[in-house]
Each structure stands twice: as structure tokens, then as C-alpha cells.
Length: 69
Image (cartoon, rainbow, N blue to C red):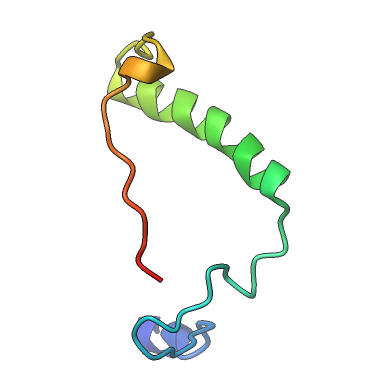
């Protein structure tokens, strides 16, 4: 059953480093995708049983990694 369902998955093959920057099946706008993030963030922290941390953006943990062209 699972294998039969997998045969209908929308798979696309790309050569390494030739993948499109955007999923061609995604019809949402940038604003719609950004609007999705906050409810998901709140839910993830709630499920984890933790408070959402509050700190300045300039001191937020993490780093920016740019993809090579």
C-alpha cells in the first residue's frame, strides 16, 4: 500500500547544483510563506513546553550561511 502511494509522489530529478531556488509546485507567495512561520513557531514552542525566548535580533543565536552560486 505504501509503495503504491509512493509511486504517485511528485518527484523531480535535478543535477547537483542545478536545483531551482523555488519549488515549482509551490504556488504560495512570499508573504503567505512568512505568515505561516509565526503560528508554527508558537505551536512548536508550546509542544516543547517552553516559553518563546525574548532577545534582541542582533543577539539571537545562529548564523547565516549563504549558498554558493
